[in-house]
Image 1 (tube, rainbow, N blue to C red):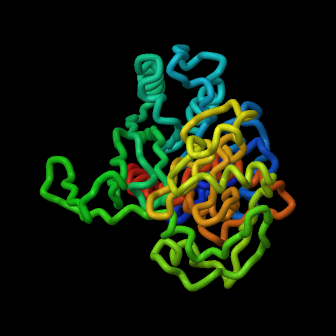
Image 2 (cartoon, one colour; image 1 turned 120 degrees about the horizontal axis):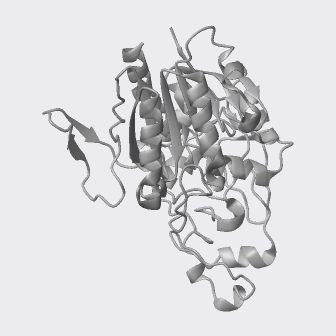
Image 3 (tube, rainbow, N blue to C red; image 1 turned 30 degrees about the horizontal axis):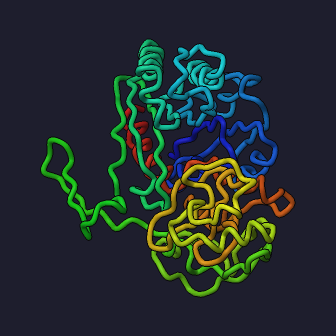
Length: 379
């Protein structure tokens, strides 16, 4: 019997896609953004998608489709309130959406929950957030644990660190998944990892690179939008590409990019693989005041990507051409399978933002396997 779950703050469905790959079923999803909700529904047709603010949703409504106990509630409430300088408690106004996640979990009373957050939340306010989450859910009968996972260590071609909190009822706890891949800074060809307190060991694979992820996609010329759908450039050249293409046909969708101006395209041309805005002549950046390491970052083909973030703020450059990343390239960086598509009627900028906001499905898959075991053991 499959384990059903509720996805709060569901976005376009990255986490749900990964959990479903692990054998769990998204029964209900709640998402306030209409484009994201539509994208979730087009890719998960069996799910009831509620396009609504979670603050206007009740636990009884969410649980009504289960006909009994809800096994699992997951979600990643927006985290703008969690900064190094912000020392509010969980009740702070900026953190209302985290409070809403807590409220709905306590109303639904699932066997387990999973909450995704940014890593800085662990030490935020001197650890006050972690303590309040633990105490709130412990009083409700949950065994709470947390960990920070890097998606790169789970087969995603991107270094992306995220904190995850889990709670299991009935005195059980979840063992977080062990890495399957080693980080690019670790120079050994393979690593042996021993499970704590045991003699068990596992061999880690080399991290997935940008080239491993993208080299089967056709090129898009600078200052060109691209075509969707479009045929693949070649057969899969890596295990990752073969995995992304499973369940898809002979062509790929959403391989389209924002058309940049001549001036911006000229800036792109100065940036080497792995470089950023620092490689661009000052005279070409005189009207650009924002400076951060991801600005005009060109993906290095032989490394994992940096964390995929807001396209407008970061201006990520494609590894092999002087243009922005296409939606499909960014989706590959996030490990979205190619069968997962975005409507061509949705603006490219909105598609890009949905991709950037996602939990990588492949990371969700590994979390799903761990949750499946924990929830199954406690039922």
